[in-house]
Amino acid sequence: MRIRNTVIALVVLAIVGGYAFITSYYSRPVPAEKLLGVKTDEIARIELKYPDRVIVVERPKSGAWRIVKPIGVDADQTTAENLARAIATANVTKTVEENPADLAPFGLAKPAVVVTVTTFSGKTLPAIDVGKTTPIGFSAYVKRTDKPAIMLTSSAFPAGMNKTVDQLRNRTLMTFKVDDVTRFTIAKDDGSEVEVVRDGDKWKITKPGAYTADPTQVRQLLTSLLETKIADFINDAPASVSQYGLEKPHLTITVYGKGGAQESLLFGFKQTEQGKDGIYVRRGEATPVYTVHEWVMGAVDKSARDLRDRTVFNFDPASVQSADLTVGTDKFSLVRTPDGKWNVVEGGSTAPADVPVVERFLDEIRDLKGVSIIADPMLSPKPFGLDAPRIVVTLLGKDSKPIGAVRFSKITLKPSASEPGEKAQQQIEYYAISTASKAVYSISDFSFSQFDKPPAVFRATAPAKK
Image 1: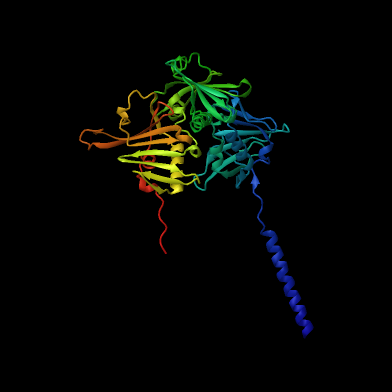
Image 2: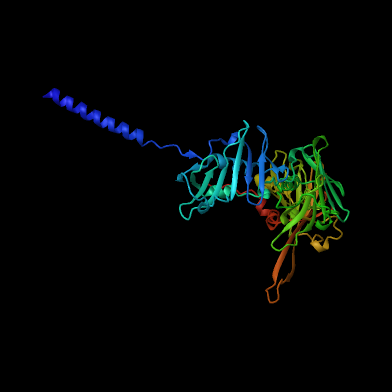
């Protein structure tokens, strides 16, 4: 009895195991059939033949894509690579008819595009005829030229193959590396010119005068120039560029790099076509005319004042031994003690100062940057309220040797309304000037508030009694 039960159990186990094996084997997913048996990195040449045009892109082994027909220009590498990938990864989702009597219903009698691929081995694969998309199901009809069957693939495939030369072209204008730039110039049609030169890890303005440049502003300008892309391809071989304002350009930016490398970009007229916001440009070393978006002009059309370092007063806080302050009607001094601490001296009385507050105050003066340079030189302090400043900070070093001073003002402008009937808005402006230069800087209200502080702010807080 026991032996018989064991035999039955073994038979049942064998049946169950066999069923599981067969089910697992035949239910394994079948790999999707590829439209072409080719890998992306095997594709060397793609021909796109439309009813009205032919476009050919190709690349050498481990090289960059180029458009070779109808014109010879560099291709946008991402767009061309995506085109090759779309061809290589296209799947056949279904075979509709093995031997169709008529191709017209499927849009294949006159295909929207015929795609032909050549590999690096020199083999030209069967062409793909691309037809209509299906009414439902997000599919499209395709056919290979080596067999009559009509197949379905994703409806994204026709859209991916529908390209124009402009869509495939490289839109890069400038190719320099920011870190390789040694100097650049900005020349305008009024004859003015700005020249900025790299000095080690810093930048200096050498024209129209000698100034320290703001490294952040310089890098932003160069980065904007480098990242500028072509908006529209206007004319690859114009007989004249005067109609685009490029014979005497409004603005010419020339970038100089290592080894004498040089790249220029010329800006001309604004496009007048409705719905267009482009500015005509061309490379100084080439003839084609393009457009870039209007904002590019604002990003690179800079004056020397725009590019100048706007640090109001540069000094070493560690060298300060005392600071005389006038804040409104308050007059007091911050004095460093022999042990490195600070005192607040006001009206003949001395009290310990909060050391971190004093040191932070000096750091904020050193780090203060103007929002913009309003005037240089300042011809008169009165328009800026600097004839009667709200705040004066005078810094003294060892043996009371003057380091310099900074004056701050706050003025209220007369209210004005921009539109008839609109309520006039009061406007407050903040300015600063130091003994380091004759320039007047506008500063933010927040920056002004960091220095508009009474003596009590600097006094140390007495420890609470236990």
